Length: 309
Image (cartoon, rainbow, N blue to C red; front, side, top):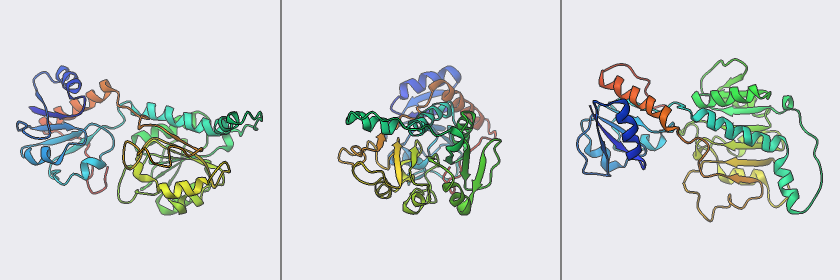
């Protein structure tokens, strides 16, 4: 089995995978001029790499998001494509979301602004039971996040394209389900994949259906949010708009442009796509298992290119 690795930390990936699959041959890929491989392990490979690899039997995407790979015009559609599924990212993203929820539920956003003006004023604490949270996307990571928030004592509503049942979570699905969820939550969390159906799912209409003073947390994909609608909902100056604040970790173009108004908005917290870094050990186990299974012709859980995840 010959495996080609394309990643900024390809040396590290080669070493951890070699220890798990000692009989395989691993090569580090450049944009072109690479030896033919049986399998590609990659994150955002260029068109030139995929065009030259005509003997691939499978691809492992080194991340949970597959939008960049699926948008590559040279991507072969007749081979299995496997993505990382959680691999420890769920716990990290759950911590990120929990921080964001408490930031708004305990009024740290307001206290931060008060500090700037030396204002000493305490806010009444809203009970967790009265702070509904909506989680859009109930895949492996979204389900993990929803369960963690439920364990913290918050009422959690989850939404997915098709019906799901998760103990302790009020599950919604479809367009009507989304509308029903929005009116019941004070924090909206977006953990959907990037697909034609989900792009800018958080838009002017969506935000208007949230209760006044709601908050938004996006550790998912940047394309889920209509940024112009978000800024409009947040309002201008020191007065809160329909939306109280937002914690954003992902953006349509990264790094976020220096002149983006998101940087300086007083009710937006920007983080540099760090909510769910991939734990190398657990991820390498998944990659090695997938490569081993595909090399033997065994069934693996693959993505659906048409669905986008």
